[in-house]
Every structure is written in structure tokens, then in C-alpha cells.
Image 1 (cartoon, rainbow, N blue to C red):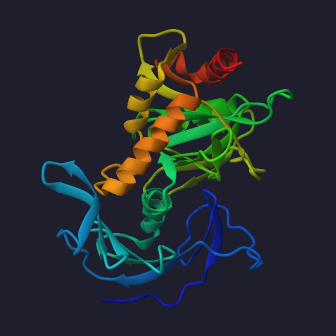
Image 2: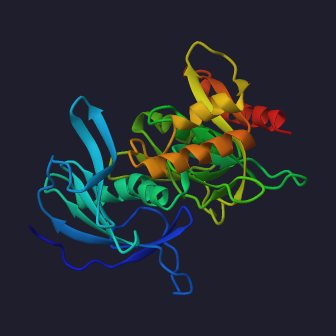
Image 3: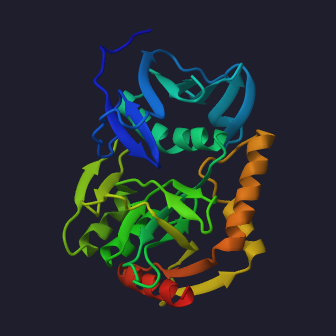
Length: 331
């Protein structure tokens, strides 16, 4: 069991939460002048074997990669939690969910913990706090003076094309809002997107998207081998805005045009239920809150399925068309 030498901390604004981390999370750090309380502190633990066994306590979330192959398990014990990525990481959550220590297995590199924390573990913490998080990327079209800033969410599981579509929309002039995790506030008169990310994480095979930007975005390689691009250097408060539309893409190589179909609130709820950012909740309280929040959202925001031409010769320009069709359908 070993621990690295003391690490310097940096502060990040992740989805409306101020996170102070000893691990480089890859996002742009923010200036922390102590005027704003820190919501979560992420600290390095120790390098040790992370077992395949389920952590002790009451299981509140779990996900399998295949029959009998656990990807992660979260368990609660006396108000604290262990979120285990089996054979990789243990995230120990304490202090009323404000303190997180991460232990890592010798077979993995500690920087990879940033990927797991900023997406899955943050969704876990937000879910415990009663917040609605969706597996989605989002963009904001050029604001219309009479409407103001609005956000389009693109929902889907890994590999559904949501990040690539968000990048194509950004290349067509929309402001990039967030990738992978979308936090929605339902407490006001309109659903509001809260917080943001400053990078899109593309799979290497989607590198062709970079050629669509009029000005080349900043690019870096992430610890899990993806291409992180920053399409909006002046990201600012890109996450602030009402949620204008929900899109569920259907990639089709044999299609030639983008086709939007609006679905009923009942069907929208079904689609939302398939797109939580954290899959596998078993805690009944969290599940009930999540279902109620999704039903609320489905009743208030129009939802569309979007058939997307995905042959190499047609997919490069779908961003502009998609933005135009959503604008026409939600006037």
C-alpha cells in the first residue's frame, strides 16, 4: 500500500459545484478566492489492490459489463459510501458527500480517476442530493433576441453519437455547453441547464469532426485515449440557459436528410428513463425522485427523435441542418 507525495490542489467548476481536487481533472481550473464554499474535495488516497468483491454495506447502485462482470458498485455504510470501479478505483465518500478519497489499483494509472470522477462519481453525488442528471451533450444556438439563450440536449448512451453531433453543431456556430453529463434544475418556471463542461471528449475514430471547425479547436488526449476538444475558448457561463429541446439521435447510414419527429410526453419519459447519467440505481428513494423529475421534464420540454444521415459523405454537414430544424420546430 503506497501513497504519492502530497499533491497540489486546483479548483474546478463542475456542473455548478466547486470541486477542489488533488488530481488534475483536465478541465480549465478556476480562480478560488475563498468567497465561494467548496462543495466537494477530491483527495488522493493510496495505491493498493482494489478487489473484485462488492464493498461492504447496503448496495445503492451497480452496473455490469456482462454476465457476472461488475463494472461498478456503490454501497452505503453508516452514512458514508464506497463507489468501487472493480479492479480499478475505490472512491470513498464521507463528510456528508463533501469529501472524496480515491484509492487506485496498481494496474491502472491514477490520472484515469479524473475521467471516472468527473462523470460517473459526480452523477452519483448529485443523484444522492436529489438532482437530475442525464447522459447527454448540449449546445446553445445563437440566441434569438425575443427568446434569449436556450439549450438543446442530445441524449444517448455511450456510442450513440451525442458527442459527435454536439461537436458538429458547435462547428456550425452553436456554443458548446456540456458533454457526457447534463444537470437540469426543475425548480423554476422553466427547466434550466446548470453548470457546464469546457471540453467535448470524442472517440479517436470521430477525429474527422475536427476538420469541420472554421478555426481549429484546442485538442488534448485524455487518460482514456479520447480526443478532448475545446470548441469555445471563451466558455464563460455557457451552461446558463433554459432547456429548449431534447433530442434522441438515430444514426442511419442509408438516410440522406435529417428528419425530426416529435414524441409524446409519455414516449419522452420512456426515452429519458433510458438516459440517466448514472445507470443502475437500486436505492428506492433516488429512483422515485429520478422518475418524478424525468416525468416533470418530459411534460415541460419538447422531445424529438432525430434521424441523422451518417454515411461519410453526408454526416459532415448535419450540424447546421439540425440546428435549423430544431429552431423551426420549437418557435
